[in-house]
Length: 258
Ligand code: ADP
Image (cartoon, rainbow, N blue to C red; front, side):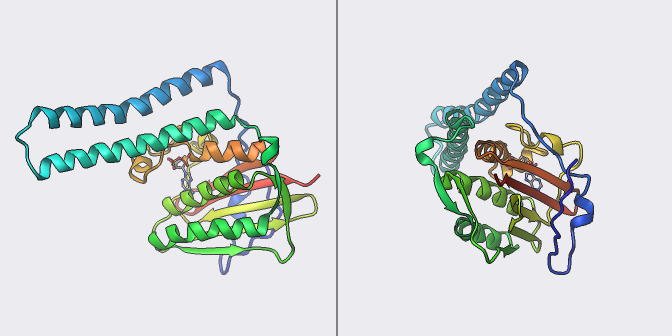
């Protein structure tokens, strides 16, 4: 259990209390059993959309007289399912290729304040679409770390996308950059639906979803957090989460300063 020592004041709301004790540390070990589970999950995740594509195509082919609307709907379903399958394969390949390492040639000195500003620009589109307020808190001082800017941006964007997806309209999403003498923190926080204590230790596992249907409906693959976790670990950082059902969630990226 890790306590957050940063004073968190979010407008009128202070969310410090309920985070203490709720922090989940997730060292993910990839044992043989994990690999087996992953292979079976991945085949299941790929087979389900393939089956939908096949059956829509077959029914469409078997009824050549089916004209106009119904055929079009079937084609739309095929295209939609193929699109989400494509996303899934892309994310799976990313996890396999990147494999938790950083390519030495891709490492640069990153101006975190600017990187966060760029990431917010994309997230603000989603927050508007979901009727959410997006608040950011960046320090005056310039904060730098060494790493791959594209990957870091993707990790933070995944967290922001989730915050928007799992927060009801009217809610709030906060992005915060905090520099302390021995560590740098990035917080992505929301006032969303929250994650219960039994699910919390598993959310960084590949394909783990609290509610698979809800995740799929929102275009999720169940890999976003696994990818974010892998990217942050490759940077020598830690990604942890704390949450309370009905109150919201806090995802914390921590980079130790050496
Ligand atoms: P998905 O594609 O399903 O969103 P992720 O790996 O990004 O997959 O997240 C895993 C699961 O963790 C999600 O299905 C969701 O149940 C839960 N989750 C992630 N972020 C949040 C959040 N900010 N609030 C509530 N639940 C979340």
